[in-house]
Each structure stands twice: as C-alpha cells, then as structure tokens.
Amino acid sequence: METIYEVSRIKQVIIEVKDRRFEKRVCNPWDVKDVAHHFIADDDREVFLVICLNTRNDVIAVHRSHIGTLATAAVSPREIFKACILNNARSLIVAHNHRRRDMFLFY
Image 1 (tube, rainbow, N blue to C red):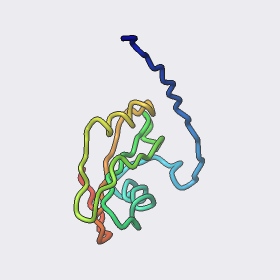
Image 2: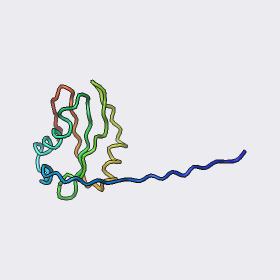
Image 3: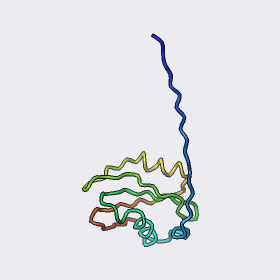
Image 4: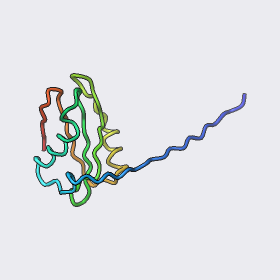
C-alpha cells in the first residue's frame, strides 16, 4: 500500500486598523473597561476577550478568544496564549461579559 502525504500551507494575514479610540495607553481598569465595552457590550452570548498590550501598554490586538452559549463560555489557555504569541504581546488582559450586559473587571 502506498503512503500518501499532504502538505498544507498556512498563511497569517495581519490587517492593521487605526482606531483613534485605542491609541491611548491602558493605565487603569477604566481604560480596559472602555476597550472591552467597545467590543463585547452588545453581544447576546458570553464572550471571553483577550486584549494584547505592547511594552508601553498600548493595545496592539483584541481577540475574541471564546464565544459561549447563553450561560457558559469554555475557555482554553492554549487559545489565549496563541493570540498573544502571534501578536508579539508583552502582556495581556482578559475580559468577560455576561449576556445581561454586566461587565466585570478583575485586576
């Protein structure tokens, strides 16, 4: 029997979007709340957000790591760190919403 090999090519495309709202540095929990609120406040399901920061605490990427159901969001550390590594982040902040639109910050 002959062995068949498959070669896959994966390409990562980075699209830079300049949004004046996030050009400032993240200095306190209220700045984080503003960023998270912009991305997940109106979602009808639970969302786990990863905010990647550079050495100056500028937001360099925001990643919806997990989208759950009405009541749960299963989170995998692998996906969280993957987003940070691919964006060369120095640090990360995670945020989570509840479908009733309450936002909780833990720091």
